[in-house]
Length: 55
Image 1 (cartoon, rainbow, N blue to C red):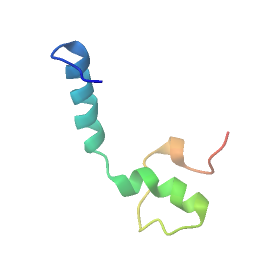
Image 2: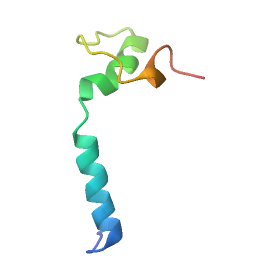
Image 3: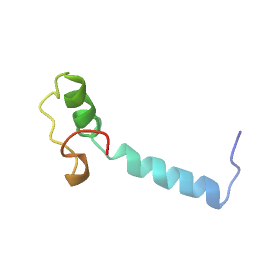
Image 4: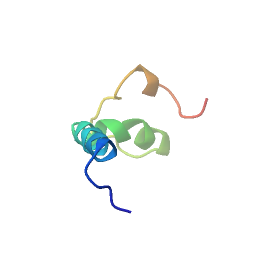
């Protein structure tokens, strides 16, 4: 599927640009910690990620 010019395409690019600004190691820190893997020294991205996955 291709998005032509317009609001959906503009919003997609805005979202992708925002997501590219995140540090991948910080995003994966909690997953890696819960899996018993090295966190590569990364700090959890925020309060929502402190603790264990699940809920």
